[in-house]
Image (cartoon, rainbow, N blue to C red; front, side):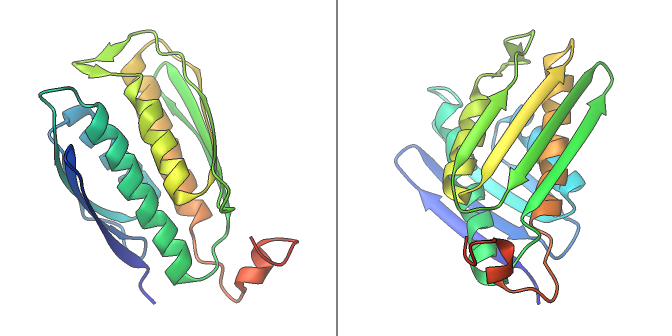
Length: 196
């Protein structure tokens, strides 16, 4: 069974469409008008081993905040729908990824309880013209809509781009592992309580 979904979200600030397919590796088409975020999401999907299309526009004349946050919202909604429609998953996933000077990690529990721990002290406030503090807004929005427990940490690094790219690669790997189908199990077997 293919595990795929689509999500559309339109507000006065942004217009976003996401297509997510966890049953195939690629293609990855991400068009947001925010090149740094596009680069991060492409790395996430590629290393997560899933197909992802995101097309979006937003009020970038203000700044990138609304578009970054709303991208997290629609992507989180897509992963929550995959869980609702696709049956039991492995639930836990983690990854530790190096990139040159940087080492970053991600750990996920697909538990239908939203919680984010985000430890990232970027040495440069911007990567190009992208404000690094916006990444926390993306992850917080994702967690609240996917309803997962997510721990992210940039352990160390000298370059903000390397640190965040390693983090998105680790996030993608952890997503791929956590949302892998749990063959032969039921939803009740995902928790000792018998239900998430």
